[in-house]
Amino acid sequence: MPKDPIVEEIRKIREEYASQFNYDLEAIARDLKEKEKESIKQGRKLVSFSDTNKQSHISQKTKKRRKAKS
Image (cartoon, rainbow, N blue to C red; front, top):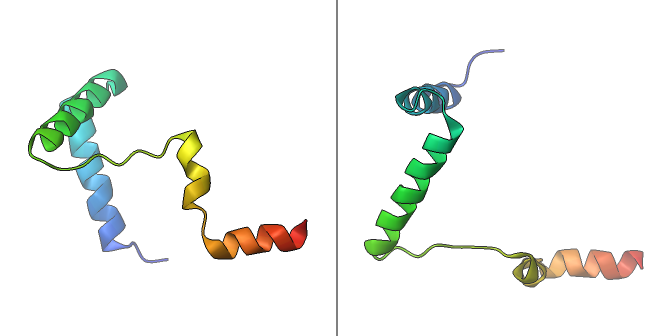
């Protein structure tokens, strides 16, 4: 199976990013949180799906299927 160039590019970027932090997941998480804060300061909205909100995001089609199975 031939390699997908988009997947290969994403893997390369991921590898380069992780290596900047010596593959330390806590350091990567701190960096991502800092980037998140900067994005919010720039006026971007942060989307969050809490457990209480998940039910409201279920499509009408899914709701109908669930009703039919009941």
